[in-house]
Image (cartoon, rainbow over all chains, first blue to last red; front, top):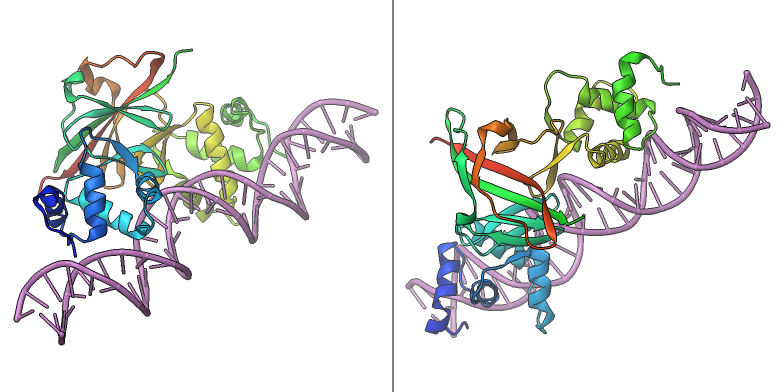
Length: 140
Length: 140
DNA sequence: TATCTAGTTTATAATTATTCTAAAGTAAGT
DNA sequence: ACTTACTTTAGAATAATTATAAACTAGATA
């Protein structure tokens, strides 16, 4: 069914590398996420709403969750812990940090933060990653 | 009803400063949280379970949530964003950071992390706080 | 100290984000 | 074209949290 043109190869490859068959729904999700100039942040609910808004045949919630989860596990998406009851995802998987301002996420390029000192991991453990979240508030 | 002895004054004061009347349930929660040598981390569910385990008359879930929320708003507890579907709280409200290892939270003293470089807040905003989470994995 | 009232507690229902289930549909190998 | 294992989907289930509203109580007042 899926027209297997070169244009979609990159998006299909991400799915395959996540162990997912490139079905229509998944390819559309993959394109929506990765076929753009700038990376962005989203919640699954936001993704679902913005994609389904323009579609007559809606993609189901479960498919969004499954696909996002698999893409995350394969390393194509990064999950952010910013608020305690919504998962934010980032299509920018390079090492970087975030400002968080009342539900809005802003990237901080990796080179804008440098450590002078960092602790060692407890014995038997190693550091998987270091995440900095700078929370913002209004100026007075 | 509440025996207003000096021993409890400090725990009662935390409640009052959070705008809460020092009822029996709340004083017990406040004592459970703050009447100890070392600070600790907890989820509301864990707090409820460990307190109610030894009680014949259970404190209701709503009271735990309300009290924790008010104490947090008053600055007596710190909420941590570590996992996306459970709120962790910390009775250590001083500035510090965390290791996070598969559901387990470990404090990192403030002086163990130093920044060489930090970005400025976007215009109109100021920095509320800077949180570092170092995620750990096993040394295989 | 008895009374009163606004604030509290509780069980339960409601909500939100997410995961599970199982029936109907489809990709891709033969 | 056929087959089979993987997908999609609607809807149910779950988990964390918040809301509701009836019964209860702290603490001010008479």
